View (cartoon, rainbow, N blue to C red):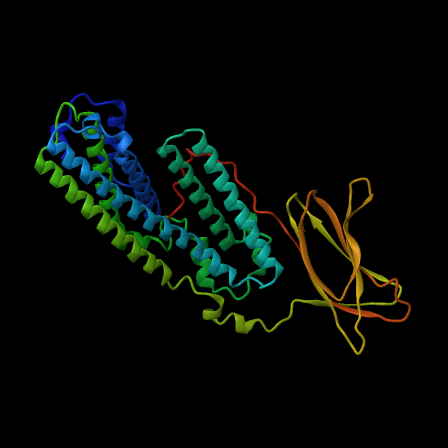
Length: 402
């Protein structure tokens, strides 16, 4: 399709031609990101401000007709891009949300979710900074793929109880071993995704090649439009290629979305029956005698850890309350109030630590001369999700697809 358009080739075109002539990435996930990158590059070329002058101000009926087609080409790619973004977003949430159904449904699960949301906000801020600096679409997708690889590494850590999830995995309740094995091995070359690559990879590889060829053709056409006008049969070929690519790619990603959603690896706690197995009660009880206090010490190993609590008084014939406050012990031994003392019948809360060190949660019954208080409580210190040092150019051949 491109031979009649090749004259003096620029360095950028040589680089693109090199990519066209090489095999697509092996991993399904990387191919999806590569297609998304090419779609955005094509949309960029189809913006009217990037058309050759002969199309921006057509002087012949043929040029005017071709210009009228370009808007429909752009709309097709925009629709495909939106579909792909939605599928990727849904897939990226699926495993995390599935695993979260096995977490205790209290403050601990909420805090783990908050940590992930904060991690995603940091990734978005990193991406926004790159875009605002005027970097290229290629640079942006190098960063996006690097961030996706980091999600994969964290997922593997969850499956093997290492890294940032080492202290969190103890909260998994009744997770099917097949799910833990899957996410632990998701990055292995011969891991659980290998069968999907063999079965569903070849059609995607062909679509990746087609996207690259369409972009290459349009790029060559734009740079040589004033010298070599497009013939009618070439316009027809381009239109057909764009139609085939968009329809087949949308069909593929919708199909793969269904494959992913119905995978036997991704069953919720309710489906696995794990919820029914939660016969234990992870609250503890302690009786605070009159004129006494009860303390629980927690150690935050890093800043931005979450200290959290949930407690209530076991009530009898009379309604009881108890004082509650939180303190931090600084390196000099001084007590620093974190939460002022108040009396509660029950309370649930959390805060993010500003310093690493020792924290005390204190239940105070010293004001009562006669009544003991039985408290049911659970407390925890959950470490923050560690943000990796980003390197947009990093390559990691051990990171697999979703």
